[in-house]
Amino acid sequence: MKITVTNSVFPVESEMCGTIERLAKIGFGGVDLCLDQCTNPNHPFNTDESQNYVNKLNDVIKKTGVDCPISHLFGEADQSPKRFEPIIKAISQIGTKISVLHPIWRIDDKVIHNDEQFLEINYKAFKEHLKTAEYYGVMLCTENILWGSSAKPVIADKLVEEIGSEYFGWCFDTGHANIFDIKPKDIVGLKHTPALLHIHDNHGSPEWDKINMHASVGVDEHLIPYDGIINWGEFLKTLKEINYKGVFNLEASHQAYNAPDEEKDAILKQLLTRAEKMVEEYNSLK
Image (tube, rainbow, N blue to C red; front, side, top):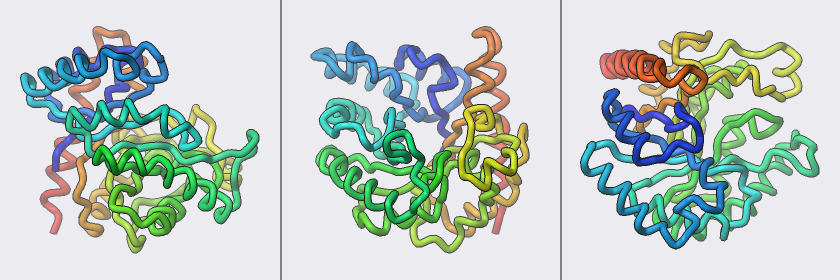
């Protein structure tokens, strides 16, 4: 299973080509492009320089052998599809096949707790985004996030079922699930296998957070696996049981992000070493 890592291990404004080269030197074979920097209207993907920048990225990908098969769009699905079109076009040209877009999780600043309301709103929103995604051959994925109905993998799975497109799937986020005591084994039996993973650890959350399905930023620690409390042995067995076919994607970003620049590479090497051992354990499972 191929190991990929988010580029958000570095500051959001970090130049993409340089980030890919640095991660290649550490030993990673693939990058999950966090596209938060594209909120800047002057980012090349949003300007007439888009094709030139795409060409530079493809040159770096060819030189390093590190590809960008997945990405993460900014914001939620309430964004205008036109806002994302130039970005989806650009990432499709560098070989990105899957991009995560957070679902709409609140209305007028009130968290959506009604599952049917959540599904109705997000069905309409993602259907509009899929017109662009299908045109450029990029699968969109919703994700279990941190508030109300948005936190439930079973609801993400149901949204995939209702939309019914080969260009729409869901991403299982291990850290978000752990905050609400959702175990890896809880995704066994869902109709749709996750198309993607966001792998990171944390220490869970207070009981009131779990009851109210609301997580503060502080509990979403995005730690390296085994630095929190997730049962990773159970997680790997679950991946084998559901016959997961995607990449082993690491979103354990905060420790490297928050460290001084001269310490980042050592932290990321530790992350890669642990991921390699996890994939080795996964491969040994029958």
